[in-house]
Image (tube, rainbow, N blue to C red; front, top):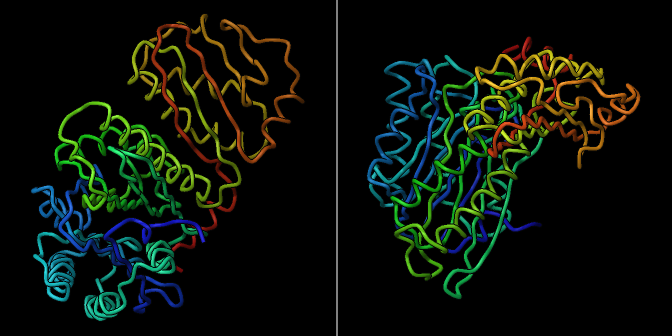
Length: 401
């Protein structure tokens, strides 16, 4: 079994089945033996779930010691009953672990608008606390307990050295539909044993989320429940990172590596998805310009359906780029498909003599690369998207039935 959350010093976990879902585990607990510096980012949807409202308050002091998450019920659009359920989750977890309720981050995912099953969740919390473990199986159970329509668990691990100390960092994520730049129905929980201040941890997480989770799309819908949180408890014993510098850069490098891995797993498991597409926009005037174009192309239904059907209708890519709200000269643009610029489709705004068969061949692979070179400046951005299949329609047409 690969390294996971259980391999990070000072962390324990468990995933329980408490009955929201018929068979799969549906409650996850991650716990640090000591208070951890922490940071979190949440959905930008103004309609947000009750646990998001609560956790925004709890993270303000940059400290956490536990994350409790249920799946199968989003606890969104649930009003007072849902708010009381989220508060009860934090209080129950804190009481059993003998920590403050403010040091508990609460998250939920699943159906929106359903009454929240508070009593079931509280019983599940009792089981999770009683079975907390640092065995590898515990990390695996937690990764599975946060899933909804996902078809597989999404886990990652990386390690590196700071001040001669080994730093371990691990993460889990969930998300399959309602995935869109600015995150989607997506949760990500990261544990680390490095010593880093809350302020620098918050800065690092926001930098990395903008380049990873905020650059993926499946269907253009931003969820009510998005949350990415990190706890770093300092157990590795390195000198605390309190400012930008070599140690901070190395930390960010590995955090980005881990989040990129998790983000790509989410897209590859997109509802009904058959292909993972990596989009590169190069030589834009600004990074934000490049990101806007990546997001627009990757979220275009016409582009996604062409990719699903292996239809070399490359004009859809340029049309999407042109409506991204970014000024560029179409007569300078180069367009390639395939890794290492395998097939050039457009050269300085002009179609090349490429064969449709060569484009279709690249589009038949399970992982596709699209490169758009604006030849305007030196900024670039990368993002990831899925195709749009008949199966996506079926899954979401029958989601509650």
